[in-house]
Image (cartoon, rainbow, N blue to C red; front, top):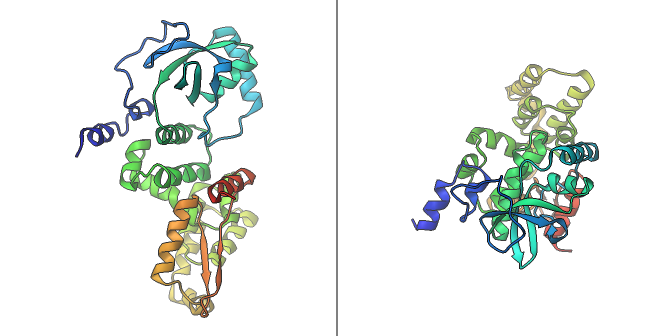
Length: 303
């Protein structure tokens, strides 16, 4: 294993700073410096010279929370510097701290303290996704999609992903399994109408129509997680198997098509569905969860 790979592996689980090859051994936030060229230092940088992170997974910020943060900054100043990468002589790009960046503008600041680092595009995306995952107010689908993007776009292996985000591998797997659920159920999880316990029980049901049927019963009758687990278990009984003969009669995907379906799902960060009939005719379905998610998929398609 090369020195670089060894260094990168040793950085697993040590936070965003460990993802940067040039992260300093120590820093002193209390010593603010004027805007200068060197990296690995804390500088005061003009807000006009900083552009937002194009890899930021979140595009919406709570306006009320930003206003509250802006008022705090007016009184206390910026306690934790933002982190940027240097693009040119006087041009920088945000790595983390976008809420503080926008709130500083609202507070009327002209300059902000910032850690200056070096990072390539892949590191930028990886750090933005990991910082996004570490937010407490993310819903389960946002976390699942961020995990999927780390696997597909940052070329991380699933066995390393848990270490990188500080989670058990089983936890990561449970979130990734949510992407197998139908779009209606994913949207309910995103909107807080369906809890993680209910979702995990639904994932264990292989038939989509049965998943949706139980999902509607959850919403209508306010079923408990235990009740949903019981329903899912009963569906696996021999009696339930007889009810699903029509589904079993449908043509199944070949190994090659299943591989392609999984590859497309990984590429788009969404559970792609391929339908293929006996005449080798069919369609490819790419579900999306919101207008922003649709735009993300369109950008991947480059159309």
